[in-house]
Image (tube, rainbow, N blue to C red):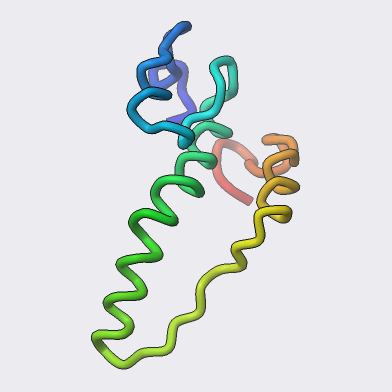
Length: 90
């Protein structure tokens, strides 16, 4: 996903229209875009919902990850070079 072929074309505002708020402003790097999308669209609208339903259906106690907005904003300001090493997460 981090290769140039996956990068958005300049002026690709269509994704912003489709995903409304789950896509950062144009000009952001692909890693930041992917992480923001996962946190805003997939985590809240998909993953947490499914885990909650399946755990309740099977009488399991599941703990959600730390979902503090201020911590998420701080993590978003960490340079990408600190988040990856050789194209893989640290």
